[in-house]
Image (cartoon, rainbow, N blue to C red):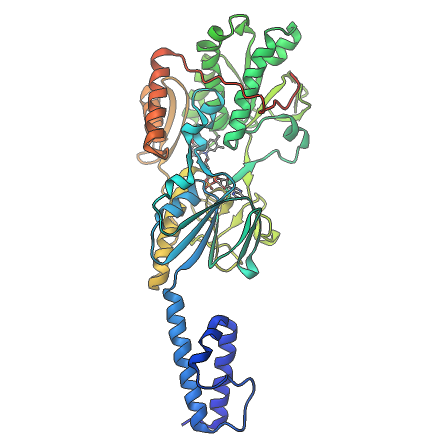
Length: 491
Ligand SMILES: Cc1cc2nc3c(=O)[nH]c(=O)nc-3n(C[C@H](O)[C@H](O)[C@H](O)COP(=O)(O)OP(=O)(O)OC[C@H]3O[C@@H](n4cnc5c(N)ncnc54)[C@H](O)[C@@H]3O)c2cc1C
């Protein structure tokens, strides 16, 4: 039998617990027979105290159970590979309501940006409207707005169009172009990190050809000299597609121009192209590009660019008004995440369960997340496959939570890497078995995989038809000029 003092203490503890953890419990006030005492009350006898205590405990327990069963609110920032996959895997789940926020109303398939930039595909072929994907969803709400900041201490996300509270927050904001702090390069070169930028590249390219028709020879040299900085998959794929365009389509569409004067440079700071691939694949990609007429410059660092001249670290200068910057990305961390939770690579360190280290109920996935493991001490590669696999793992863990099942740590199975250079020309490194191959078969695999990953049956069919048409005719031009997509540098 508890003493009056002990019961009083119990009640005060329960009250403190209610106030801290269940502030909404005030709505149950009518169900209580007495008001919760704020301090020890000598007027209350043992029997009343015991009743109060029991009554409070029952209500708290019931409420705790209710709130556990109630739908939790997950806010996902970013409908890229990670955010979209997470929302799709939790679609119509009874325990969760999802708010999927993106500044665009569509999902972008970044691996095929270069084909949009080179006028081989339409932007709509590789974009998918988010509302269309979740048309029949009962628990996913789409919000097209830009997140301006996060306030983790009060579980809030602020955007340009409304604020959102969450039980769980998932940051999947991807990465942005890394200019390594060089403002001039940022100002004058062309990145390719979203659909708009891919279209801007296409527009600038076409504007250059139109202008070159009536320009003097020095200017023609500048206009027809295109420099791509960064010898990763994006740089390799872009320069390969541009080289094919130079021989296939451009001479027919611009008979006034002499395309022998067109120069395509691919600059890479390290000693090999496709740094993540095997030496054999890297060398093969270089051979392919050089056969197509691309000037590949390895161990070449860019120092400055003023919109006309590109100054290299070794003092050499390349004349060009069109430099495409594909030299790297950094994590896109939303405002409000304190710098102590952000790595030097501008990523958000997480544990193996995707939880942001140091924050409660906040998770990070994909390119913006830095999850170090024994296998990848510097974090997993910034790839679509990693983003998708992480989203699937987090979604499985969200399913474990309501059942109090143990959470599953993330494990990445590297299936391999690949890149394409052009028609019948691709390189593939498989992880298991560890083999590299290239040529037509590699190119078929590259195409099949990319078709498979595209969202939407219609998009797959259209892209497939486009590819077949181009393969058979060597012609493909969606060369529409949009006046509002201005060039950065004066032509
Ligand atoms: C040109 C190019 C080619 C690539 N090719 C390949 C390839 O062949 N294979 C491969 O595996 N990977 C490739 N990648 C990498 C791959 O695209 C990324 O690893 C992948 O997109 C990462 O997915 P994510 O969900 O983390 O971010 P993303 O897919 O980048 O999605 C981030 C989303 O967040 C949204 N967002 C960002 N900030 C905000 C904000 N403040 N408010 C609201 N919304 C916001 C963006 O609009 C975007 O939709 C390529 C990347 C590029 C740029």
